[in-house]
Every structure is written in structure tokens, then in C-alpha cells.
Length: 489
Image 1 (cartoon, rainbow, N blue to C red):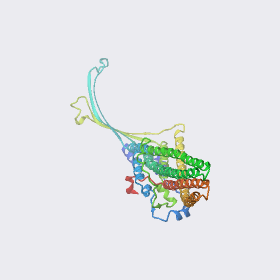
Image 2: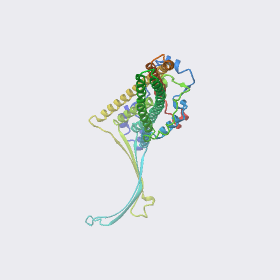
Image 3: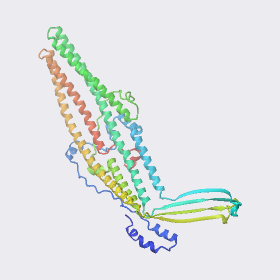
């Protein structure tokens, strides 16, 4: 509150200026105008000085030149991903909705700004009237007038100032909401793209395994025809082949669904990306680490935290709007124009008219409605503060979870790569021994199935590392800097 002294003395001063000319009183009021309600102060946030998983950062993320999480997909060095991301930001329907909400908030801010200024209107009229002969004035009279009317709701206690503060904060919250939608969108596009590439790779692995199983079947069939083995080996080869073949349709269905989701994220109809994604490509490999920073950086990076803080500022200003209703309101009205009984006299000096009035108003009884409105505004302010604090805690947990998942999945991938190498060696040895008649066919099939499983798990883990990295970027608030923001970033 900016004017406690002025308000406490209001009753005493009103008696002293009772006989002061209206314009002098207006000058005093305007020069001492103030805004009631609490002045907004950003909450003092206490965050941990470092991440709980700091040891993981030192080991896994600081060995290379670190990349800013802003436009994180550029570090993947994948032209298709970059083009898809650029298109999604332009055509995604959620982005369009957020942009429309932002335009609405900007219009409301402009309305609140205009509401503090006078309203001026122009009017003109021409009339002819004949009076009643019974009254003795039974003659015809012409009347002409033209002029300007103005009305100004004086913002003595800051209701409109607080409303403008609330609208400005809401506009800024809308900007952060758009950025938050971008963070979510870019993460979803990245994850779906990477999973699509992974499914393509898994389908290729299954197809390559089918070729190997077909060769094993031909060997088993030849050895059976030569009387070296029984029908069992051939049947086992057929069963293993068909079992592997049965996995491919489910992988293809998953790829189809994934591409359709990606198309929707780009604001396109399902099936529109199949041609673009038809060319098989390996999973991208980011060349740089991540600038994880410290927990305090989230206040700057995460749009959802910034949005919650701006919502708190707007709610605080609304308390002032509600509080101002307890105090008198003042409106200043005036007019300037011309009046005459003929068109010829309308534009003479004697036709000029003017009026000026100051109108105070004060609610004396409202059954406690204004007080209840203040209580409601204060409760909304408390809700906004709780939402802000909750957003902070959620952000911290998001980063800790994403960091842990990313680093530990990388360790899992290292183990799977070692296991795959050993499995491949075992498969080659079993095949050689079977061809030499030193091992039965079941050993070959088991080795083949184990190798397929390990290759598939490795492919799943490879994409999990990348999608966990994308989730880490998202948790850090990456993916929202637009072209117009780059100069200020």
C-alpha cells in the first residue's frame, strides 16, 4: 500500500476542504493519489545450492563441451529432426491455441490501460418543436447543438492501476504459457521421432535375424535329408523362424502409431510423414553434454515456474482492486459545445457552452460484499503462492528424476553392449560346432534367440538413453527460445 497516511487523514481533510473551490480540491486529490492493497514482492525462494545427484553430473555430463538446453535438438545434428521441429513450432495446434490466448491477454492489458484515461465522445442534434397553444407558448421553435462530452474516472485509490498491474502480469504469464507449450511440444516431437527411428532399427534387426534363421533352417533341412539329424531339428528351425517373424507386425504397428502421433504434433493428418520417414536412418548421437547448471537456474529456464510467479503477481494486484472498492470513487465529467436556435447562430461566440462536474460516490452499506470480495482475492493470492512453490518442487524433482534415469540408462547400455558382444561370439561358436557335428541344433537356436533378444534390448536401451536425454532437456526448461527471443537470451 502506497498511501497509508493520506487514507488515515481522509476524514479530517474532507472537513477542511468543504468550502475550497472544486478545482483546487481536485488538484489536491490528484497530486496525492495512491494505490491501496499490497505491493507485489517476488517471493524469496530458497533452493538447494547443488543437485542431489551432483556426482552423476561430474561423471557423465561434464566430460565434453556442454550445450545450452534452449535449442537442444541442434546438438543431435539430424537434419530431419531439425526440419520436423521447425515445422511443429509453426503449425502445432496447441501452439496456435497458446498464441491466441496470448493475443487475448494482450488485448485485456490494452483495455486496462485505456480504462485509466478519459472517455471523449462527440454528439450533435437538430430539432423542431411546437408548444401547446393552451400554455401560451404555442409557437414553433428550432434548436441546434453540437459538442464534446468527456468522462474521467479518477483513479484516486488505484483500482485501475492495480487492474493494469494484474493485466500486465497476466500477459506475461501468457507469454510463459506459450513457452511452456513449446517446451512440452519439442520434447514430445523429439521423443516420438527418436522412438520411430528405434522401431525402424528393431524391425531391421528382426528381418536380419529372419535371414540368419532361414540359413539355419536350410542347414537343418540338408542335414536331415542326409540322415544326419531327425525331423526335430527342422521343426525347431521352422518354429524359431515363425516366432521371430511374428514379432515384426507388432513392431510395424507401433511404428505406424508413432508416425501418426508425430504427424498430429505437426498439425498434419495421420500418414503425412511416412514418405519423409521412409528413408532409414541411424539414431542421432549428440556430440555435446548438457549444461545442467544449478537448481537456481530453473527460475530463469523453466517457463512453468515463471508463469506461476507472474500469476502470483496478478493475484496480488487483484487484492488491491478488491480493496479499492472500500474507498470513495471520483468521476470528472465535462462538456464543451455550441447551442443555438438557428444554424446561422450556431457558430457564433455567444453559442458556446461548457460544463464541469466532480462526482464523488461512496458505498455506505453492502452487507459485507466488498469485504468478502477482498477475502476471496486474498485466498486466490494464497493459492497462487502455493502453486508457485509447488511448481518449484516439481521442477526440482523433474530434473533429479531425469538426470538419474539418463545416467543410469547409459550404464545399462554399456552392460548390454558387452552382453551382446559375448552373445554374438557364443552364436558363432554354436553355429560352427553344429556345422561340424559337435553340437545339437537346439544350442544354435538358443544362441540365435539370445542374440536377437540382446540386439533388441540394445536398440531399446539406445533410444531410452536419447529419450531420457530429451526429458532432461525438458526438465531443465529447454526448447522455448524463439527467433524473437534469441537476442535477449
